[in-house]
Image (tube, rainbow, N blue to C red; front, side, top):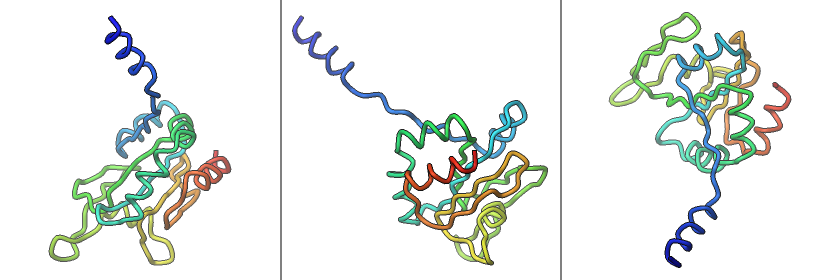
Length: 152
């Protein structure tokens, strides 16, 4: 009996963590047809260490997760994804640049700023697909929350 009480106490003592709702471009666009919200797009690559840092710190922040889940459609997008994406009436494709390298057209279309694309990038789109903000660097949860409050 004591063993069961201990197990019950441990299970109920473990805090529950909020989970960030991540969508594909297509899913977010369908959801936006019913409920209009801005999009927050995290553009990253597998080899980018600052992207990994954001995944493991910024996007684990409970307050940020709540804000993103309630007020935005969050899309995590690998800039080297090879799948075709249909978004905002256009088909975007992966463009190879050499042996095992290249970039997706949609990553370039969203994240390019002054002729450069950097990773990580955060792009915030208004519900009409206009760009509200482009950030090309690591950003912590506190600073991202401040920016999201200005947008919403």
